[in-house]
Length: 116
Image (cartoon, rainbow, N blue to C red):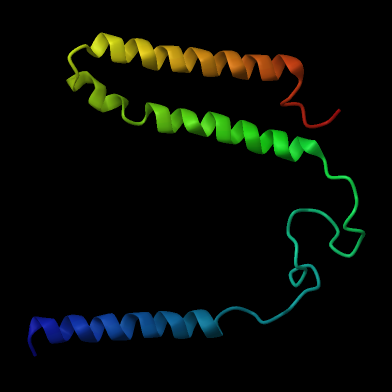
């Protein structure tokens, strides 16, 4: 057998064995909690019109805001190839200082406090 045939056989056998094991290995013991349609910590059987805590939205927005920091600073290692790497360092430091000031402001206002 040549190498291509061996690779094709391996590619067909290994995933088949893994799929077979993953299908028969788990215990099929359904639970009412696991069969529940929601996994966010709220009772799905209650009223859908209960007030939703804005704290969840605040945490999500803060995560997105500080996650953008990574997107803005990701090309920074290539900034030293520019004409003025000092200017790149200045703008990166400015972004970090602004985000740090925003975090300090949120912390001071109690936006990161989960329990009231």
